[in-house]
Amino acid sequence: MPRIVLFGHSGGEHLKNFIPMKEKSNNDYHTFNLSQAINNRYMPWNDGEHYRKFMKAYGKYISSLNKPPLLGDITFWGEWEPATTFETINYTNDSIKDNIISIIRNSKRPKYLHHVYKIKKESGVYLQNTDPYVFGDNFFYTNCKQRGEMIRLQKGDIILFGTPGKVFNKETVYMELDTVFVVGDNTIHINKSDYPQFNKFSDEKYQIFKNVVLEKIFERLNKKNGQYFITDTEKKFIIYKGATYDNPVNEMFSFVPCQAFNTDTEKCSFGKIILTENIFGHFLKINLKPINTPNFNYNGITILEAFKNHIDSKEDDITLTKKFWQLIVSTVFEQGCYLGVWIKEPALIK
Image (cartoon, rainbow, N blue to C red; front, side):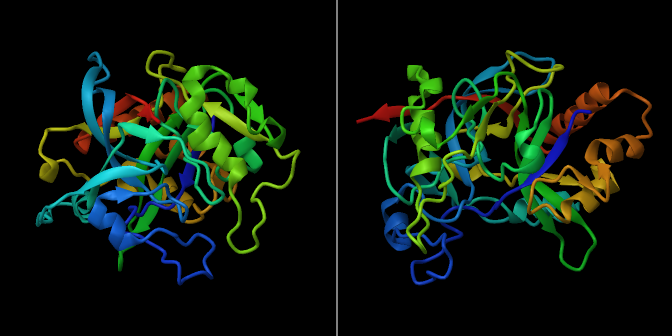
């Protein structure tokens, strides 16, 4: 049976969320100076807690499944831990009260727009890796929370990367979606013996991916005890390649919700896509409760089974998985975003 995974990760915005050095009881405190970063409009490579960035980059996007892709600058939410220049987004929150989704998204709009056009390779014992990685010819999911079923994903499985939330004083729960990852072909296994050459990724096109992701998995030290996070030389990581727009699986492909950049920074921001039980059924609500770990099922009911019951379908699992993906796509379009299907890797600078 194809699997649908709700993958919860920290969804706060970088710089708005910051763990200062004085809070050293938290292993993921940041060592850079926040005020200096904001004054210089430059965020160093993140060495603390993972958060999201609202980014601008050159990419390919589609506004309809029936229309060809468009090229241009896009804005989107995602993880990118290398250093970035950024600008402040000055806006006033609109007084939107027509529905709960609009209220949530409006309250979650970003404060900073990070530019992802250039990168300088860096090494360091505390630098974070980026996962999932959505730049270049393929999306990659490489290491985060890879245990249990997450090391046994199959072609055509779907991972929804996002952050759970709850409306106070209400039973409404939701997921802030930032990345849709459809598992494609050619999974690759790596372990510490592959570091630092990573011969399975010897092609020149992978040099940024290796520095941003693979090297950082094995270089990072625990700030509390000074030990490497990865000490088991036999521990394997599965490098999953995402299905692409040009090479889909069952007509499904990986994407990030995005918007075309309209040259006006003050009007470019948007909150992440909101998935609610009103759209996807009660199964989303019960599955979001234990989302701190990747979630396939709740009380023995898989997400796909619950979705099948919700829409009262008799269709086979592969068809049903595609229908679920199509519902995600429709939700993205309905909330005013496009599908970012390719994002240009930043240019390497010396």
